[in-house]
Length: 437
Ligand SMILES: Cc1ncc(COP(=O)(O)O)c(C=O)c1O
Image 1 (cartoon, helix red, strand yellow):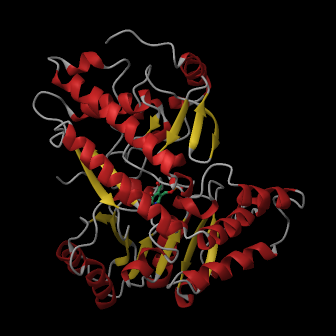
Image 2 (cartoon, rainbow, N blue to C red):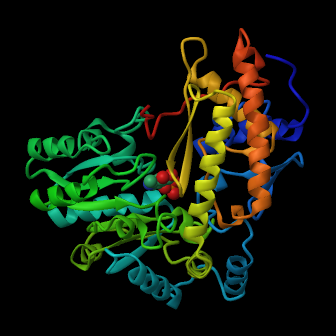
């Protein structure tokens, strides 16, 4: 390790203090020090504006993490914030329902093909878990076939390497299948005839659906009498205002939304066909904050603004430009072996690959360190918001990315690249979306 800089003094001090009262010093694995080169990275942020954030040491970054994607318009969006302020004057949590619930449900029903009825939660995990319970209640079956990431609850996390604390009996009810492999899904459905309640998947993530994959999944779930759930927590209001189901023309039975819905306010939604959603009246999906008014007001304002500003198209075209820029810079430094631009235009990803001489972890750590050094807060690629749609920001990003790649190329050309780390390497938590080369 070379000498640790002083640029992150307050972050490091807060981290040491936080460890005494907060396990991992963070509420979210992906926002914790595990995901950064601790000692050479900011660990605490203080404020955000547009697509910029400032850390507790006063360092400013163009943010390509965006709180893990809820910030779709930008930090402190004036229209969304005004709506929150107006609602704040009336109250936050009430003793009965409010009209805001109807207004937002009606909007979602208008936008999303499968949405005939809607219920709200706070986290994406609330919505995915409610969808699973609903499917089990509707079909009278227990097992679930799944693909992608779906949150922290037992039925999903029990299928990952982070299954500690989940009863084996629960793990045994969930079966994973690979994306773009309808045959694998059919084998599961055949081998568990009359036992599978639901198939849940992210309709698209890093990989695009190949040939007829989503249509095949739809046909298989119909053939085997299984509820099809699209987890649109990431795709929602980013790929299309009507979700991936609208974009690809495949309508599931239920779908879950969260993240971008409230531009950072905690709100999620489960939507779907009336005949299944009706079972909400029988199951128990009920919480103190389901109708919390600030988030509902924020969501109504967010959707209105996404619609009125053509945010989906504009974010997609920024992503396309950044993908091309990044590819050119990677090839300028002959780094294709180490760094691949992947993903869709609306969600460009950067895949880092190690080799025999440099591990994935060291390569990823070095890259993250150099991106931060150049003022880019970026982990897995470009999470985008409307405020990135600005030529100056794209030019700044290109220049910073170029300098970061130059430093990365230099570091990995040295005999012991790990010695170029100015802090602790990142630590793998678990791989949600395994890389396919
Ligand atoms: C596709 C998908 N589903 C579900 C979730 C869980 O959402 P939350 O973290 O808000 O509970 C996430 C979170 O990253 C997600 O990406």
